[in-house]
Length: 329
Image (cartoon, rainbow, N blue to C red):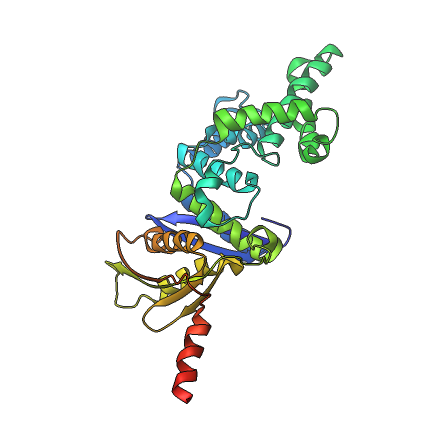
């Protein structure tokens, strides 16, 4: 999420879905809906139990219930209750942001080797809040303020440094905040992701990058010094719900676009022609072969023909021009 766009990728019944929307009230509702249908039941039950624990004892038992600021502890402490799947998506997100190269599905193995610790993680806010609560309460108790009152004041007052976490990261507590946050990220709030977690993170990131920071997904132009090979490839997803495969073709074309100026490609009614350096073409073929699998298909048949001429430079355009010139002679 940036100040202008929200990007989301998620799996539903094993199929990857994604969307990107401008920041708005409608988009916020869409985000909330996505969270509600995705989170485990305990993430809904715990706040309900907390609210009941606050209000029911005084009403029915005439005794004090939980303090209202317990809701703050629950909100900030949710990071420590993430289920494994959410910790894996969280870890995948961190790896995508930590990776220094171009963000692309073809680089998924390299991205997976990136650091799972991220400087901008919201775990920083959690560290600042609970540290401030503890320090604030101790200082108030030292000032002869009642313990329960000191804890209440500190719990509410600690919202201020939590809001200012980003600024505090640049001040004297930076080393403490960073180290504690990094430890929590490695041991509690994130877990090493699987391939499908990384694919979701990469998909969501690329959607956002197209709008906000395209340099992270597009390679600068460079001079090619080796001969080009040409590939004719047909990818057939087996087991689709209907006879049309145009949705899969669209997704494949998007993957091809992610390779920037490394390749040239042309869609035909029966196949796709791709031109590029042979090592790049093999990476491209692996990436587009995976597309139907990423969208829930269990079997894929891929037909590949490679034309690799080494005695002279050859391109798709030059092959056509050669035939056309002979037709006209």
